[in-house]
Image 1 (cartoon, protein in one colour):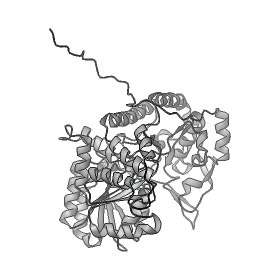
Image 2 (image 1 turned 135 degrees about the horizontal axis):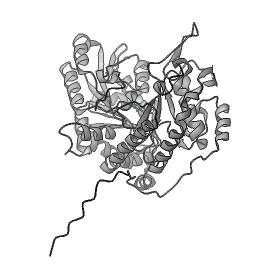
Image 3 (image 1 turned 90 degrees about the vertical axis):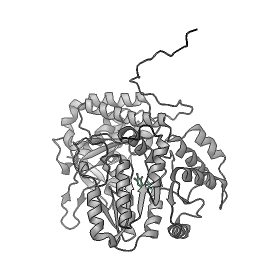
Image 4 (image 1 turned 30 degrees about the vertical axis):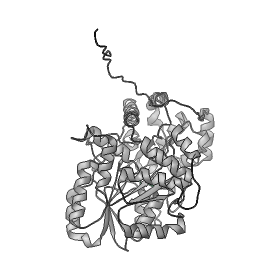
Amino acid sequence: MKTHRPIQLPTPKTIIEPFRIKMIEPIGMLRPEERVRLLAEAGYNVFKLPAEAVTFDLLTDSGTSAMSAQQWSAMMAGDESYAGAKSFYNFERAVKDLTGMRHVIPTHQGRAAESLLMKAMLKPGQIVIGNTHFDTTRANIESAGGIAKDMPCKAAADSGVIDPFKGNINTEELDSYLKENKSKVGFVIMTVTNNSLAGQPVAMGNLRAAKEIAKKHGIPFFLDVARFAENSYFIKTREADYSQKTVKEIAQEMFSLADGALMSSKKDAFGNIGGFLALNNNEVAEAVRTLMVITEGFPTYGGLAGRDLEALAVGLEEVLDENYLAYRIRSIQYFGEGIEAAGLKIVKPLGGHAVYIDAGKTLPHIPALKFPGQALSVALYEHIGIRCCEVGSVMLGHRDAKTGVEHPAPVEQVRLAIPRRVYTQSHVDYMIEMIGYLAPYLGDLPGYEFEYQAPMLRHFSARFRRC
Ligand SMILES: *Cc1c(COP(=O)(O)O)cnc(C)c1O
């Protein structure tokens, strides 16, 4: 008898979600006239729109994941004991399995872990070096009296350069800086993927080199791992010698380089809330546990319910599923390619959690101080029902308090962040189709000016008028 061999079919072009849907949530299906009215009421600020009025909410990938049936069922087993709950030990086991670290401390979200780490580690005036600090990381360094210093790699400076690991740190600069200034440096922290740099990944080779430089100068080496699984998947698919390793092995190797890590579990742990600190140093862990009682709670729950800890423990394993990661990364590339084919200018290469549109290049008729990113994000909501986030002169620029002069930001971008496991391929196809219909009208979009702005973090509460 002939042995049976399956027919070799080509690799399909269609991306499928590696899950099926058991529970649904309606999305806002409003008429354009209703969106026009809501935008005017919100002062053309999409942060002030009710979420119910949004069809595709791409404001952030943080805390917006769909949980799995396994996560929901684990939540039912949550142990809500104040101290030493079973759910803590389940969570601790999951984090230790991944990180190999001695101490696991839950927090209510990433920035709480940052705040505790900075307070426990930094002396006033000490410098913290990163590939690019995320904005809450920077704020927590500064609020603890430290100085945040970014050292992105050279390729990162040019949005046109295609480089597989644009999230890297500049190792030559790191080495020469530490040679001169090591006495002033508290520690080095690498953010994977590099959120503030369009979600670009960091290579294992770069992490290893940065670790060795830090070690040579006696400086502790930390990781900010909100998107550790996406970064590990990029290493597997883009870096020599990693294609045969599992994503979990790659993640474990990454953690083995570090003295400690902090995570916002609202990203790659599929959590709607949560975070943690994982540490090897006993004194730092003890200092954190002492500090946290004031703000986060007892060290075995850290501001979370037992059921949250259960959901996160399951999420940390699920995110390492390579079918999921292949779908995740491919679907973001597909969305970006579709937007580019529709004639808009995007930031390349595409990163791990979002598509960034270069609004400056896409709307060249709107000068920076009439906010092209604002114009595009308002138009995407008004005409398509997409809510996204301006990352340009509204968010990163500032007005001089004395002179009232507006200063632009170095980039004018719009970020379309993709929540995990939430939108389907047909949602993405629909958005691409509608962006294609909108493209011929982009030259007619108006610019904006401030009607009101707060002195800090103005993008959240600002009101605008068209000009
Ligand atoms: C989201 C994020 C944080 C902050 O975490 P929160 O859970 O939002 O407080 C810190 N670092 C990075 C890289 C992030 O993406």
